[in-house]
Structures are given as structure tokens and as C-alpha cells.
Length: 227
Length: 246
Image 1 (cartoon, helix red, strand yellow):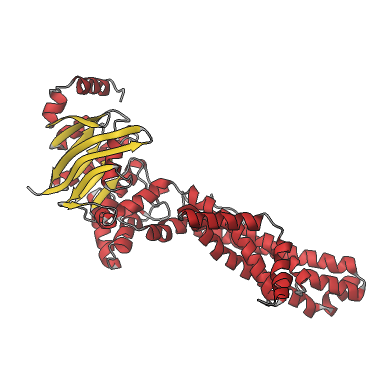
Image 2: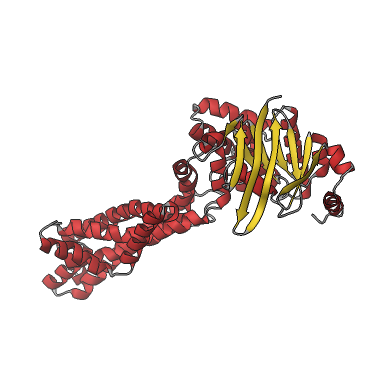
């Protein structure tokens, strides 16, 4: 057995567990981020002064502080007050979801603003309410415009999910550190983690390009990409 | 004849610039009225104020004798069609879906009924079946504008407002749009049209209004306005149009 094989096969279950947590954190946090991002973008564009201020403050606060500080506050900070006690995994998912929401709010906002105002006027002139306008006319186009940004966010979150290890979540990076310490094959263990991250990111990117092409509409989406 | 739309003393300013300085007129059922006038004279603003896409500062607008207010505006808009200078089709929807979406989402019609109305509306403006599944970006300007007209008439509005419907089109595409509008006029649709197409105005308008600097300077039959203008300002405007300067 080569040293690489030892690292891989002897600790196969650990790697699978790490991959599972990494994907779980990534996928759930981006979903939370989509919901929050959409909400804050709509508040910021269409809301009254109060909602606008709430959205802007949230976006500024999250984007202006490091994610690791946010995770510490959520897990250790809140935990120490005894008010809410999240598990490490919960804290990681919630923290990264809240974080992603702020960035996605800005992706959504620019996508909304990219749609010519004439379509808003046309929808209103047909008798659409503001809500009807947003959900029936704007959102289907916003989703198509925002897809490339989502790809970006998805692979960024895949890498950032490694921060969950500071909350003791056994995701990929934590696993690689553990395997390294057990075998003293650190370079192999960390390289393997890197390869898995790379593989996951490339697969996710291709998957998103597939969706971009599937959903592409002349005049709304960018030109079709070749995978 | 039954009055469809009445505008009374409508005023609108942007910052300190008074664009509409008290405009009044009315349109009866089946009438076509045309508004002409120089750029910046308030023509588009007038149309946008009628269905509150721009909020008027003061004045009253009555649709079928009912005062339009911010409260009933969503109901009123269903009955006021609007055709825009730049078509403003929904880019993510096919020609057919552009016409159907208002019927389904706003009027809450069942899908088969909406489909039937949409097809009829598209055929009326000369958009044949082979184009129904095209997206706006795959259509010419003239085709897009005719789909936009179909979208407006499908809602069976009481009146349709046209904001320079041909001014964004290449010369060779103008005819097909004017032809579609002529068909509507012949079918008895009530229409208020802002346009520079004087020949077209002559052939369909019951009345032409000359709007300049926010006031209706002169109004009358096409004959009176185009052949025998009274005011100096209208004469000057018409000669400019003849020279192709407006």
C-alpha cells in the first residue's frame, strides 16, 4: 500500500463523513442564503424607508465582519449566554446561511436592476400588483440572470465550509487534519482534501452551467456556454 | 355617445418644470383621438398620468364616469390598455405567453380560455402561428410591437393608449404596425394615440389635439388641424414635421 492509499482507504469512512458534512453545510447554507438574499434584495429595492434601512444594515454588518467572527458569536458567544445552544453543525449552517444571504442580496439586487423598467411599466399597465409583478414577471428573469453568481457563491461556500472545523464539525478539512495526525502523512492527507474540494467544485460548476443552458432564453440569459 | 375617458385640468411637474399645465379633454366610445406636438411638450407624460404610471399632481381622470384614484387604480388599469414606444414585452415569455399572462394572472381566466383569446388577438394584429412560440428577442421590432398591441387588446380594455408606437421602428416596419392599429380603429376600439405619423392620423383620427408646452393649443378634425392650422405654433410645428425635423 502506498502512503496515499493508506490515507484514503484506511480512513475511507472518515472521508465520506467529511464530504457529507461539507456538502450538507454548503447546500443548506446556500438555500438559507437564497431565501434571505431574495428577501433583503426585495426589501432594499421595493421596501419603504424602514425596510430599506434594515436590509442595508444587515448587508453592511455581515459583509463588514469576518465569517469566522460571525461563527464564533453564533456558537461560542450565544452558547455562553445560555440563551440558545446550537450544535456545531447547526451553528455552521445557520452562520454561513446568514452570511451568504447578505452577499446574495446584492446578487439579486443587481439582477432585479438589470431588467429594463419598461417591463415593470408594462406589467403595471396590465393591472399587475407589485407582488404579482415581482413573482410573475421579474423573478423568472432574475433567476436566469443570477445563475452565474450562484455558481460563484456555491463554490465559494464549498471552500468556506472548511471554517466549520473551528466549531469542531468533522467536515473535510477537519477530517484531513485528523487523518494527518493519526498517520503523520500530512501532505498526503491535506492534498487529498484539496483534490476532493477541487472535484466537488468542478462538478458543481459544470452542473450549474448545465442549468444555465437549460434555462437560457434569448434576450434574457447570456449566450449558451459549452461545458 | 357614451363617454369612456375624461381628463380634467391635469397638472404634472418634475421638480420645478411644469410639464402639464392643466389639460382637459374627453373621448367617447369608438373614437380615435391623436395627440401631436413637439418633443418635451408633455405628450408621453399625459399618457403615463392617465393610468398613474406617473402620479398626476392635480386634476381628475374619469374612466366610464368613475374617478380614478390610487385606491382603484389596479382595477382601472385592467381597462386601460397601454402600448409603449419600446414595446416592453416580457423577455422571458414567448409571444403567445406575453399575451396570455395578463389574462391568467390578472384576470384569472382559465388557461384554455386565455389561450383562445390570445390566439385571436395575435391573429387580429397579423401575428401568425409560426411566430407564437418565438421569444421577443427573436422577433423584429414591428412584430414585437404588434405582439404588444395584442397583449393590450387581449385584456378587452375600454380604451388603449399608444405612446409613439412607431417611433422606435425602422421605416419599413412602421406600416405593419399602423395597419394593425387601423384594424383596431375599424373594429370600434377607443384609442388615444401619440404619434408623429400625420398621414395615419388623417386617416383614422376623429380629432387631433396639438399639445405644446403642457397645454392643448388647438384641437379639431384632421382636416382643420393639418390642412388649416390656426395658431402660429401649430403652423410652425407642421412645417417642421414636413421637413423631417420633428
